[in-house]
Length: 528
Image (cartoon, rainbow, N blue to C red; front, side, top):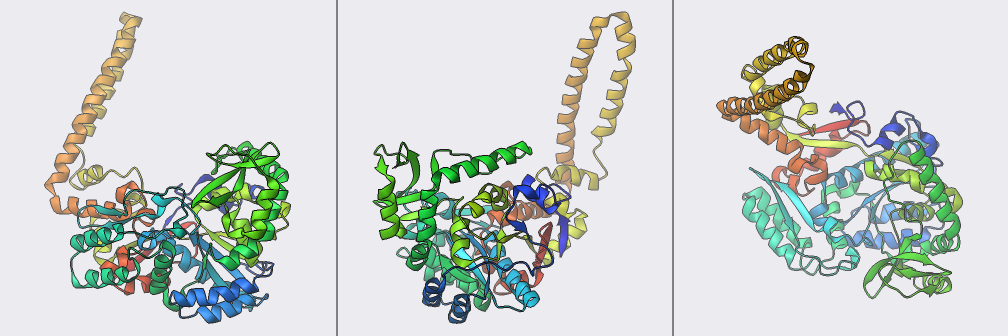
C-alpha cells in the first residue's frame, strides 16, 4: 500500500529527487535511471565463469536452497544481472537491508518477464569494509523505548569486518534481547539467531545465513566481497585504476565541479590525492594516497613505488580493496550488471562515480532507487485510524504530538488569546510612534517578550490537555516511536531481526507481497 509520496513531500535527498523528476540527468550519465521499459537493461558481462562457479558452493554453505541453479545461470553470459548490497550488519542490519534484497529479486523477476532472458539477482556483502560501528549494533522496538544492543568497543578499528569474529559480546546481546522480549515466539527466534551469531562466527557468515533463513528460495545469490575468485577477477580493473590514476583524479574533479555548479552538495568529500582504493597490510586496511611518484598508506610516512602496488595487485589481489567510489565499478566490470538497486545515499554519490565508467572502459548499467517501507500491524493501523492522524504526519521529523492531542481535545485555549494580544499590541504601533518614534523599539521588545511567554504557556496547556487523554497519548507516542524510533525512519534504525521475533515467519511473506518497486513512495507493510 502506497501511503506517502516521498518526492512530493520533500523526503528524498536532493539528487535522487531531481533524477526522479527527470532533472539534471546529465550529472548521472553514462548511468541511466531505470523506467518502466526494461528492454535496454542488458549489461555486458566479462569473464565471470570462475566467480559463478565459486558462488555456488559458497552459497550452498550458507544454506541457500537455490545456490547451484543461480550459480549455473550466472555462468551463462546471456544471463542479465541485478545487483544490490550492504554491509553485513549485526542480526541482519537495518530493515532497509531486507528491502534492498527483496527489491533486487523483484527487479530481476520483472526484467526476466519483459526480456524473456534469464536474470539473476545478486547481493553484494561488503565484508571488506572496516567500519565496525556501522555493523556492530542493532536496535529493536521495545514496549516502551527502542533497545539498542552492541558488541562492545572496537579493538581493531582498521581490520575488515569480514576478517573478524563476532566475539563474546554477541552472547551478551542475545541475553539482553531474551530478557527484554520474553515469550515463546521470540525465544524460539533468538535460539535460531544464536545458531549463527556465535562468538567464533564471522560477520559475513552469520549475516548470510540469516538472510537465507529470511528469504529462502528467493534469496539473491550472495557475493562475499572477499571471495578469492572475485578478487582475482577484479585484478585487471584494479591495475587500470592505478595506471590511470591521473585521469581518474581529473575525471572525479570535473564531475564534482559539475555537481556543485548545479547547486548540489557532494555526498563524498573530495580527496584529490587519495586513490579510491585501500591496501590491507598487517590486518589493517588503509587508504592509498598518491605521493610524489609513488604512494603511501594513510597514517604512515613511508613512500612506496607504484610498481610495488601493481605487483601486489598481480600477486595478491585480495590485499587491495575498493573504496565507495570504486566498488560499483569493480562489481559491474566483473558481473556485467544490467541494473543496480541503490539506496538514497548511494544514488546521491553515484554521479561522482559515473564518469569513471567510460574512463575505465566499463559498460554503465541502469540504476534504480530502492523502495522504502514502514512495517506496522493491524492493531497499530487501527490506532492510526481512531486518532485521525496521517502516516505523513507520523513520519514527519517535525511532528508535534501535543499539538495534535490538544486539537482532539478542542484546541489550544491560549492560541486565540495570543492572536488577539498580538493584534492589540500591533495596534499600538501607530499611536506610540506618533508620540515618539523611539517608542517603536521598546514596543517590539514587549511584543517579543509577550509572544515568548504566551508560547511557553501554550506548550504547557497543550501538554496538560494531552495528559487528559492518557490512552490516546500513549497510542500516539507508540505510533510515533514505530515510525521514527530514535528520531530516524523505522527502516534505517530498526533491525531486520526484530520483526520475525515479534511476528514470526509471516513477516517476510508480507514484505514480499506488499512491497512495491515505486521509488517515490513509502510502502506500508501491514502484518496480522
